[in-house]
Length: 258
Ligand SMILES: [Zn+2]
Ligand SMILES: [Zn+2]
Image (cartoon, rainbow, N blue to C red; front, side):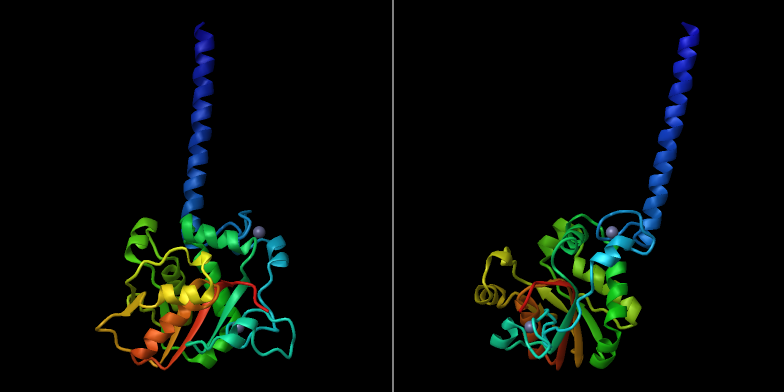
C-alpha cells in the first residue's frame, strides 16, 4: 500500500514537472511572439520569418497587371483601370494592397482583427515597406493615418487593427502616425451587405477631422481590407475638405476586381 502510494506520488511529481515545463514553454513562446510572429501568419505552423515555406510558395504578392488607381488585379496588360474605377471617380489618388482577399489571407486577417493576433502587424508592415518601397518614395507621404473605428467598437475589441498596422509601418518608414486626426463619429455596420452606392450613403458623415489637427499635404491611409473603396474615399473627401492635397492608401488585402 505504502509502496503504491509512493509510486503515485512519484507519478504525480513527474506529471507536475511536465505541466510546468509545458507552461514555461508556452510563456516563452508568448514572449517571443510579442517580438515577432513565430508561427506562419497564414497557416499557424512554426516559422521563424512570419511565413512558412509552403505558404511562401502559395500566397503570392499581387503582381501587374493591376488597376492604376485602386491596385486590384485587371485582366489585360493594356487595361488601365479596373471595372469599378472606370465607373467611379475616387477622391483618393492611388493605393495598393499586398494580397488578394481570399484564403488563407482572409483567415489571417480575421485572426489579426478579431482574435487578438496583433503580432501579425509586424509581418504585414514589413511586407508593405518592402514591396511598396518605390511607390512610397514617389508618394512622399508626410503622415500615416489609420482608418478609425467607432469608439464603441474599439472598446469592445480592445484595439483598432488599422492603428496597430499603421504604427508598425510608421516605425519602419520613419513617417509619423497620427491616429487621432480623424474620428469615426457614426457607427456603420454590415457594409458587407451593401452595394457601392448604399455604402457611400451609409458612410457619408461617418468621419470628422479633429479641430486642432494641422493638415499635411500628403497623407497615407492604412486599413486591413479594400473592397469598393467607399471608406477610403469618404476619408479622402473629408481630409481634402480640411486642407489635405493628396491621399494614398495601403491595405493588407483587396477584393477581386476586373
Ligand atoms: Zn504557412
Ligand atoms: Zn480600380
